[in-house]
Image (cartoon, rainbow, N blue to C red; front, side, top):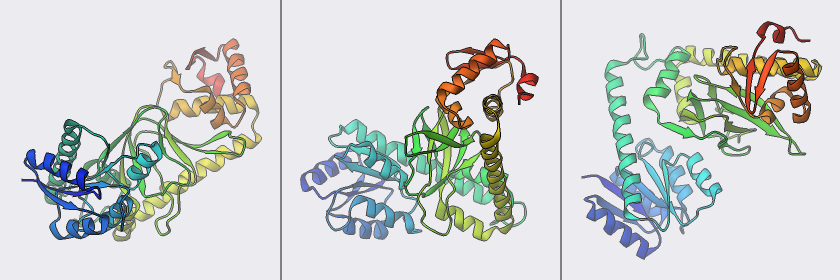
Length: 353
């Protein structure tokens, strides 16, 4: 029988929810505030924690922060239960590492579904972990050693949970806590900054098999930019703390990751120089080619992206970018149909100065 820890300060809500869970054959532990909840979690190690946000003594965010830092409780699935329905509250909880979020009032099926889903995922991850500890698929010599980025990517895909983001959805905001590093399984992600006039400047495009979200491993520095999905995206993520622990134990991997990040910086520098000194036509052509390469499209397949995104990458006004696209279309270099851009003459596009 699975054990659920319910942390809720409202006695009526706590009793009613506990009764529902007991009727569903769960063993239920209850706590009237966050401090009591943390103590019960460490003592009993429940299978899942359901926690209110606004509570005396210690709120739900504080509970999650403590639980996630303790080696004995960090892997327990955590669901927030709260009347707060604003998107920023949901985003804050999920960015801190919560597994799910249920808003009051809720019906029985919604509660049961969330619990069963998280318990199932936890069981699958545990099974994978136990299997991999025996098979050690990533390690070549030392069972505790990761030597290459490919092995690190396997670690992400096999031992961490998937997160889905719809096209246009913001993954994290500038100034959000930088608690996680992501690996893209499918899709395209842009990172960008917004200036004082509200203009968006895309700093990077990341696609399948790319990492993003790096800030600092030694300091609690918030994100310095936004990240959003350009198309429907699936990504794995692990905490900065977990990645830091891995790197401290695997020096060869640390060096390879350093080279990877250095290559990214070099790519950004080249892009900034091109934005500063190239002509509008060159910037437009390069941006089309760059995006086509990022999504691995062949020249006769359409590239689909908002004009504003392409203009942001090129570092020019959207209106100017659209006018240049029209020129390219008249010259037979591309074909444009709505959001679709089809490259017709790859070699000439590459030679534009």
